[in-house]
Image (cartoon, rainbow, N blue to C red; front, side):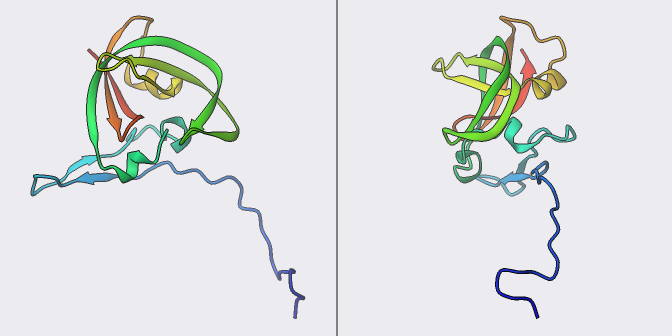
Length: 138
């Protein structure tokens, strides 16, 4: 019998990432409006998830925006907290609605809009306050 604090077997399974989930919006509908963030693109949640309002607020919207550029080796924040030991190249956008700034992994933005250039007009699909789940060229 092992002593307290000892285990018969301990195995490090490595880093776990959330890559797929779906959100169903029923409000005012019989059939849900389904959002699958970055469907088919193998997105890790830290690449696009910026605030837990993406899950808890149940609000989705689109906003017109301007592409501001790429930022290399940026720190990643979720709920205004730094994600420890995580940096990535980000695509930055500014909303026409209120000037709010949004970001998402450069890799994901380029999958949706391959030739994204400074000043390009886009339509952002947003969950909650600030988590981008799609970028479309306007």
